[in-house]
Image (cartoon, rainbow, N blue to C red; front, side):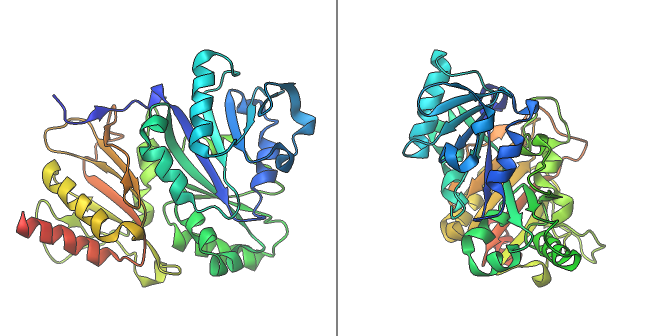
Length: 358
């Protein structure tokens, strides 16, 4: 019998967190996307309807805090705390008193630190019973993004933890400004897919399915979620690796850091002993929780035929789950870190020390 739960993704509602600094185009993007038929059976959580400007999309009022749009999408305001809103919506859905929906899009305020919301979605037992974090989409203003990244830690964190980065207002910035911002975002978050939009004209598909879960048989989603290749630069080494040592194929050096934020991937060639790995991960969290902006990994654990997914923010980690299948023949364990003021060498050294003392 496995120590780990199977992946229950298909049984829980996927949640996409849409974040981005003030004026970066979240509201414009949502306003355009909500009229698209592909948004059908989506629930969009916003702070206020008036901010999104949905008047031309209203079809039916469903209670004071919820409207059904012509596209089939449901829009709901956040009443009080987010966890209470999510629990109330889950209850209404189960009771059949809310329009049907299969996914949730959650727009944050421009000044929001995404970490508490990610922690809520990852590890709150009453929330994770009904919802799962699918991914993080962050908007960045092409005109003002560089200055915002310099001056506001929230903007930097929003971009650093994203799975997909949407650069807005590219038509209003010159070519060199756009190019510099793209290069900076690629250094800051090399694992994120980057897209440019003009006046909020976005393919709504970019707001869905950015997580690792294989509910629809998409075998490449694990690779996309980790995007290991973006964190590594493979080159020949002049030494041998022990069978449990992390592989050092990377070029994530100081030039890839942005305002103290680093991104790197540890790769383990042989199946991992879970007890040792879990003890090490607990030690990493105990020592550096505040520096762990995001950790996500797919692991080959000794004794398990299926890949194990782990996902965490700061000291909060979602319970490990087994995916249905490996995406390909590569059975290496891959663990991606996005950190603040924590370098790869320190993390690797802690793994070696765990092996010496274990």
